[in-house]
Length: 84
Image (cartoon, rainbow, N blue to C red):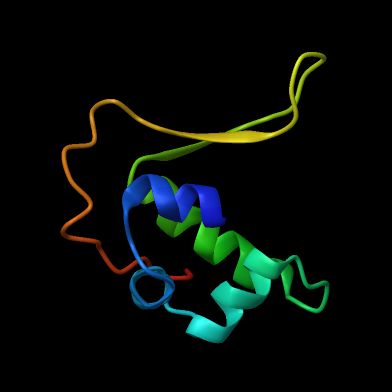
């Protein structure tokens, strides 16, 4: 999550606001804490994907990764992503 957020150039607060979770949830995800609901993880992931992040699976040569879609112009305006 931290790498994806860094690609967009946004703070934990901005990611929390656009995804609808608390900043504390974002911070706990980035620290790799285990007591986070699958729903919270998916909500944040969807918000990142809506803002141009692509999650790449691991393969023989590398572990899992994130990338930014080339068509994304700017992270200045982050839409609010509903959990529905």
